[in-house]
Image 1: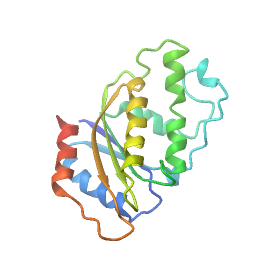
Image 2: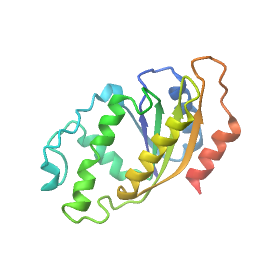
Image 3: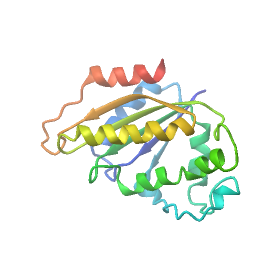
Length: 182
């Protein structure tokens, strides 16, 4: 059975990101799905202690279970609002903690640092029209996954959620799912 890891960057249990997670899950009923909510995880930031330059893993053990699931996943899906033109702080802390894999690759020679190749999807929502920010966030993950043995192959963006006038576009949602599954 394939494994899917959902990373929810929103603090809201019933917000737009949560609704999108529920919609996407319906298309992957044949997968084992694990979901991590970054605000509940409260990840410690990377402090550049350099432990990962010499050891596998991180000196901070708060994300060990997460990173185990991260390495095992066939699909990784990020769901995030835009906060101050980027990912919310807890999700940004997790992205910064990918340093353990960059050190594995570039300091310790593990190529790739994660054996399993994964397909990655990015769902971004914003209160206003912030497409340029969403593009930058997507580009950040694309760059990260060139080292993390993943292909950011699907993206879905919903602007203007603060106005309440947004709509879920079923065609775009199904396009997003199709890009992941092909």
